Image (tube, rainbow, N blue to C red):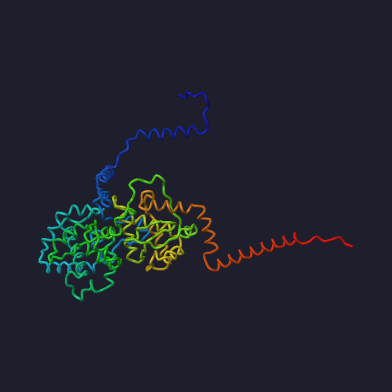
Length: 463
């Protein structure tokens, strides 16, 4: 029955037809795909294996680098080149050359110490669960396979350190010791975040096999090996000879974070927020100088009396690899401090173009063994990409604010802009001096003409 007194409108027939169609579908029973339902239930109950549930715990310290970092810095920054350590790159075809030598090193260790394979395996077995929890991914290896991998890789590292540091006799024709190109690749491969085994595994194997009663610690041997590239004073080795880390990368990273109040991160954000500082060319125009500073680590940056003091940093293949992997570790490890992340952000702020790098090199803040100034500038800018940190809770937050306040001081900016524009080079200074002298002479000439006019006697009456 049509209860409306209005005449039907054009299109009402189609409209009613659509409603009938919807009503008909609404009463239909939707048959659920049982296989799809079971698949969804299975996914819900499945534990993530690429980024495990324990990855956010303090115990997790060895991570697969996020793809966003790999896109910026490349696979070569994080993937081993000649030797795989740990499960992430185990079995790769391109890394088999050194894999064969691992067994040779393990045989050398057993023959020298008379410690059996069974003893080595038994020493690591109680640590299996703790070792698995150190990795951000579920390790798809059986218990026997995983323990074998830890023993083989761990003993190889320890034996290599002992040979390279001449704690034990070395054959002169050993290719892993005598060939310098191998050593340079080892330096970088052993500090890649994806290429690690837990330090407690290394320490257990080291203590068990230390039958020659050497008074050298595992940390001191590791640091001596890495110092071949870094070349810091011998006092550094003595100071950190008993230092522990989560792995070799973390051990070396900690030696660049000495006990210094200026390197501590504030527990609470500053009441007055910090600001991003300007690039070097702008800071110089504002009267801020950048000079090489003194310190045990290049992280010890200071700002005093309008001068940014930065200890010299060597930019080479090893240091680039080290910094990139330290930043990745700090970004992934929940409780890790962020000093390296903050320092790379500082460099990224300071450097915009190759001219900024050129200035840092001239002031001995950077020692460039990497490439052209333009390549170093691009590298530094990439270090700051895809990286997150709290500007107000980083160890340089106070410095950022002090530099920004100094930069915004109008008197400094006005005077230094004038000085930078007219006295930055001898020729510009001469031009400015000549222009000033010409202006003064013109002014004196004008004054002299005026005085002459008023002091000249007035003309007398004509006769």
